[in-house]
Image 1 (cartoon, rainbow, N blue to C red):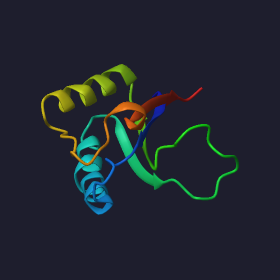
Image 2 (image 1 turned 90 degrees about the vertical axis):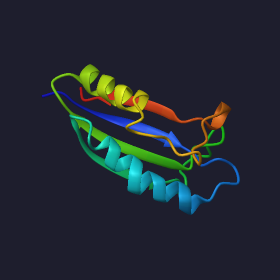
Image 3 (image 1 turned 90 degrees about the horizontal axis):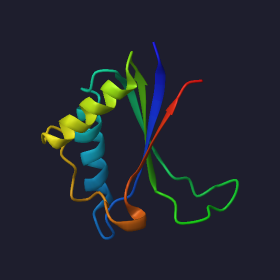
Image 4 (image 1 turned 60 degrees about the vertical axis):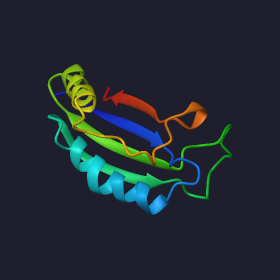
Length: 111
C-alpha cells in the first residue's frame, strides 16, 4: 500500500492569540483531518530557535506532519479537499492565509 506524508507549514495571523490558534489546531483541525480515510497519524511541531543554517526567508513557525497510507493518494487528497469545501474541516480565522505567510502544503511519497 503506497505511503506518503503531507507537510503543512503554517503561521497564526499577526496579532492572533497563539493559544487560540494552537487550541483550534490540536483540538479541532487534527481530529478533523484524522477522519479522512487513509490519514494514519498527525504530529505538530514548532520551529526551533536553533537551526543548522539561517533560512532564506521568514519560515513558518508551525509544521503539521500527516502520515498517509492508502491505495490511492489522489483519493485521500480528493476526500480531504471535499471535506474542506463542504465545511466539515473549517479553518480558524487565527490561521494566516495571505501572501508569504499563507500555508504551504507539500506531499511526499515514499520511493
